[in-house]
Image (cartoon, rainbow, N blue to C red; front, top):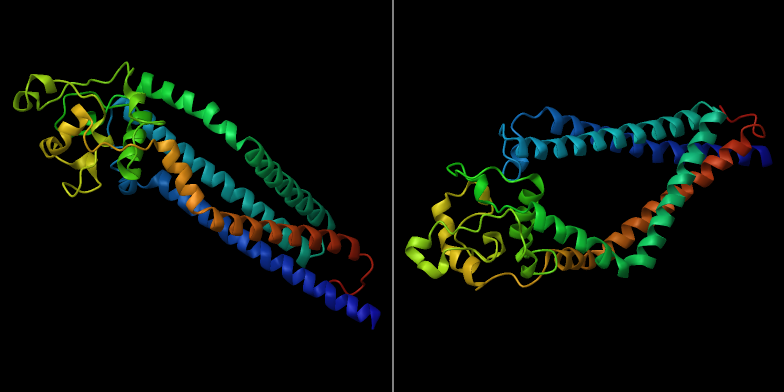
Amino acid sequence: MGRGGMSCGMKTMRFVIVLFNFFFVLLGLALIAIGIYVLVDPSLKKIKAVLPINSDPAVEQGLSYLEVIAIVLLVLGFILLIIGFLGCCGAMKQVKIFLIIYAVIVGIIILFEIAITIYFVAFKSQFRGTITPKLIDAIRDKYEGPFGLQRDSTLPKPPAISIALDFIMYNLKCCGIDNKTDFNQTKNWNRTNPWSASMGVTASNFTYPITCCNPGNTFTQDWANVPIDKLQSVAYCSVNGTDIYDIGCYDKVMNLIDSAKTWIIVGAVIVLVIELIAFIVALALCCRTKEDSRYSS
């Protein structure tokens, strides 16, 4: 009975670890597929408004960021495939070395996740003071406004970081990193108002980015493809700050995270529990391989 019961327990442990790593394999394949799609899709439809296909060096730099994301997805996908292979093969074919390597990898992942969580909780209050000054410096040195993205514009295409900031501000309905004053010292932003002739001499220059302004129902979210004359409806806001977003993008992102923190915590706990079970089961299989003569039955 003892050996029979142990064999039954062994089969259960093998099933658990195979099932768990089957999902690892599926997730790895999904990440690889997404990474390949991002690399080979010529149209880049899903990010066309953010990184238009163009021979301009600034846009080419933007596309290189896209390739980095694709490569990261591919690497993560292959890592998950390797972990899944080690777990499945180690459990099904009683390859003890595979189980040991698998347990070590999962253990490292668990320790890394715990360390990141502790670091985030301990230093969360310092993130703002560390990150926001660097982002504000990037606005000062790199921001050039969105008008260079218009098809009929004579302005050069803005760098990727400028494009990304405009996209974030427009879609998250925020302005700057801390607030609208982050744009007071920009070095490369051409503030010329293209509608100053009809708006008066006092409106010759923009004070704030037009993407910081609330457009209402004037046009769709695909602002990069909107004819430039359609943007005139929010030009007064860009000049004098009326209807401008008061919240900075850092606070907006933090608010979004806080609003979803319950689901984030639940998801993180579930993942950690599953990883702990996989780690314990892998160690148990390593210890039982020599004790249960019917392991491979």
